[in-house]
Amino acid sequence: MKQDTECIIIRGIGSYVPERVLTNDDLSKIVDTSDEWIRTRTGIGERRIAADDEATSDLCVQAAQRAIEDAKLSQDDIDLIILGTLSPDMLTPATAMFVQHKLGIKNIPCFDFSAACTGFQYGLEIARTMLLNSKYKNILLICGDKLSAMTDWEDRATCILFADGAGAVVLSREPGDQPGIVDVLIGSNGKYTDILNVPAGGSREPTSEQTVHERKHYLKMDGREVFRLAVQKMGESAGEMLRRNNLKISDISHVVTHQANIRIMDAIADRLHIPQEKMRIILDKFGNTSASSIILAIDHYKKCGIILRGELILTVGFGAGLTWGSAIIRL
Image (cartoon, rainbow, N blue to C red; front, top):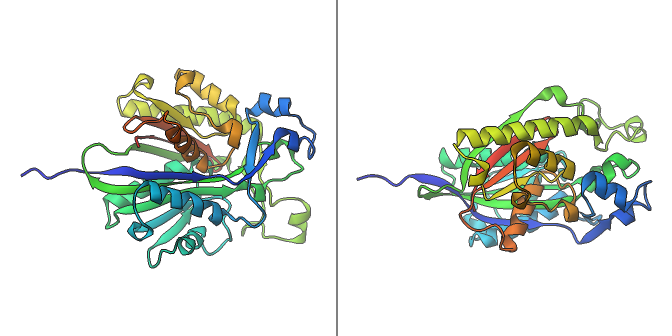
């Protein structure tokens, strides 16, 4: 008798952004900028900023609870927690540990990983591999960041971009032949570690009075080089993803890129001939929330009834490292 095949499905999805809204007009009172200048160059109109007493784990817990509820599971059904972040609560222990405790889940493994804004694609690859090759059945994948804690509010080039938020998905191994994770492609090139980073605070340059004075604990970015490489690598990754799955853009219902900059997103759409009506954009309301941005966008459009069950979604990410990745998924 033929045995049922197994596949990985996306059983639930959830997201969370803090209550505080920081508009472009608000920013114009902090640095030399304006609403028109920011919108023209980035496409961002406002962003969400966490409260002083909200840590990355707090954002992640909110998103995780919503994903578990959407999956119609309980916390006790989760076998493993994987958390992608570049703004951990502490250097150690892992932020996933704080999330585990706040969710009331005991005795399951959990860990953090760092792939910056490509965290969703990296997390999907880690989770699906572990689901298909181990005893785990339900994995909670969370991507969350409090980037406002790493933002230099005196640097106009970066403070207009970054925001706070978290997204989560519950991935499960089930009998069937229609996977939620159709395919994932990830890559990196450590040659470019200098164009987007936080210089100090690690073992290379430990915290000191000097590093604090020189503001080396904030995100630093070579915007021109990041733009060039983001368009190149996301375009190549998405193109390869379509080719190796024998798909065309016409077969894809929705394209969700990392919500970094509208000019980057427009350049990718032009490069891959993606109709604007297939591009899913939340950048104007939420800014750049790192790895959570793709989950936030998918969850938003799912709740709006625009992304429907069974439709193919092409996701594309790019982040510090450099890292990049793409995935084809269906809810």
